[in-house]
Length: 199
Image (tube, rainbow, N blue to C red; front, side, top):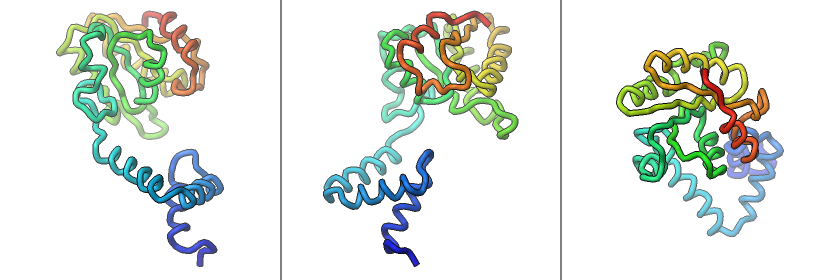
């Protein structure tokens, strides 16, 4: 039997399922939510449900969006001849914060990882190649994370894309090896982008 009662225990249990949230953090968050004014708790619950219901993949780049195509793909100001390939929507958001990259994106939703059972068919590789066949892309910038999985994915994509006659470059390693792009500051990301190299 729970010390706190079923509703609180259930809330703690659900919060502890979130990535990076352990038992103590889940308990702290649960008590914070319980002590919120009811309208704030309702707004939090509504925003979670609305995001779950309304967010979908952009049919072009596979970013998470509530409009299709997403604002980046539908913008007339973007250079549609350069495409940056990222692993995750958070990586795309990190590059957008630099306000320097003006091309478009493709979000893979993962990286190739045989150890974890992730193959090219588990991420949006086929969709990327289809885009390259259907558009006038001149350069593909591969901006996967600088770790084993990211490098394997970059090499795999490079081997697929080069025969299409499209320039393939890789972000420079101003981004620390083993790091995640979403946590890197804007200046480092910009330097990595500017220092990209051909593959």
